[in-house]
Length: 311
Length: 218
Image (cartoon, rainbow over all chains, first blue to last red; front, top):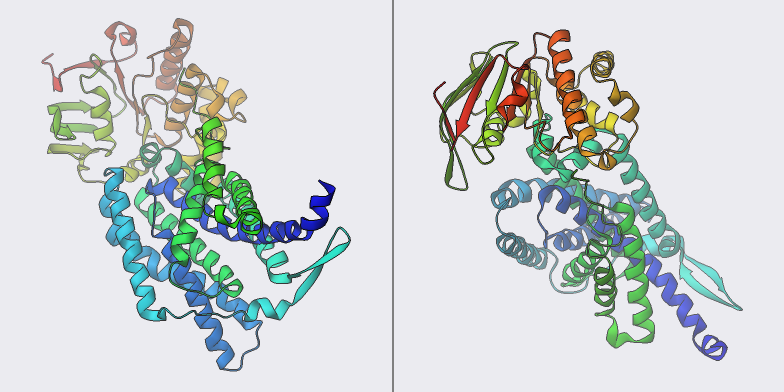
């Protein structure tokens, strides 16, 4: 064990740091997916496209700003702007014109519709940004690297991935928990998630709440993408990879649990990145092994809510 | 105040209500009696705007409300306690009761006044107020559902099978609460569904019997 650690300790440390940064990104996407599923009862495959388009938009805005001589710190504004823009421009028409037509229909139809949407958005993305890699790592470079002590060694790691990503994920988690529990709009969203018909009978305009929630979820996905954009070169397919992982996170956490989504994003993010370093051939299956292991023991997910007592 | 004019409602293509005619006068106490599957719950859901109407009309205070979206009902002063309570499990009892009044954007003072009035009427809710709704027993849940309906039901409350599944002692308490409600707020109309006509005899002024989606002649 000690010998193994001497040989591989550094790699493990790197895997943990990588996993933490990755988990933060996956959490952003998964929590939006979870929120949207709670209200719309639709598993939105196109959620991954919103992530990808958010990433491309952020990179483009960032590059545009840099080309016009703005300092790198301005590209942080670009990250937020991309999220708001993608959420506001794509969210409402997708919900109003497409998803609204299939509420309450069979799951297979809903999946087909959101999958079609995913394919369309993927092509739109290729049309706009092409298939050549797009990259803007200015926001990450701007903060430099930090030497993380690990045993007797140090691991140089980007401050962006070490502090900004996990920090924003924690902030999102806390902000969302506060919003859903303490504000009326948040409680209305929870009410529609719990029981749409009862919520409507209590005076809640479910149509409006649905639009609002979807737009918000779309913006969260785009924000996840925007935050991911400085860490990688963007290529077609980045959306598919993200959505697949987010599904695993949501299923593992259980419906309606934002803290649960954080824990399972961490579990799956770390699991995946340990696999990347030590058994790369298992990278793709590890998230599912974790998911299946959890669902075998707890079919409602790690943090699934207990049913209301009937009698 | 509430009227159904020859209302027909289908669920998934199957006719469930056939030309149902029913009226609840202002401050009136009316029972809708029928066996399971007769169409009681469907009648109340249709009244609340939760089901599409195939034929006929719903009027509230003389105005056509057939196509009025469900969420506008509470604004007209109609409270609803659905079958199976349907409380929001992760909220406290107090939050459950406050929600419909907050959604209506009533002034805080008015909300506090209504909450007090409901607590006076149903004192046991005061002790339950901080508890999570998911942990309530069936009987407690029914009381909370009634309290929640009363928070916005200033003109009428629709109570769907409130006695079903209640132990006799609890049913007695619930009936007493309804009698108190009528005394304290005589202007609030009550429409209540039940399968056993005996239970409601002393509580209502008028009964309609429903069978296979049709109102039987009195």
